[in-house]
Image 1 (tube, rainbow, N blue to C red):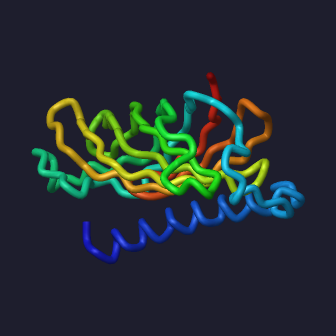
Image 2: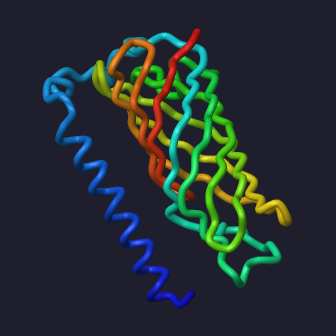
Length: 191
């Protein structure tokens, strides 16, 4: 794949993700932005685990550290599904004066692939959550993952940011974007 083709493909995917995120922001309830709870530690739903089934759109097919046998063919992951589990390990989080928590996120994702049957991803990382309004929270994730196409296994980077619209005390619509994918799912908060 040539560099211009790669850049065009990435630009179209990022543009689509940005359009989706903008549309979600526009249809969200307006009063959520009026009340900030970021400076109220512990003013968030109390839960021990977040369980999240989700759908993925692959933004970057090749891994940062991809050294597998199919390197020249371009294992471009397109779409798939997955599941994340995140136990909360620090509440309040690293900044005691803000409404934040820290969890360890791990799971499994299966994605289609243009040049192979499928790819399996096993992510593990740290998730830092900030509760900014009664209905809204944002988070960042950093960690690593293993990719496999049933022949080769290689490590890769995971770096993502996302947000949640808490439409009930125990459920939220969750969106995340970054490397290596964009995902949309439903989070279930359990104790």
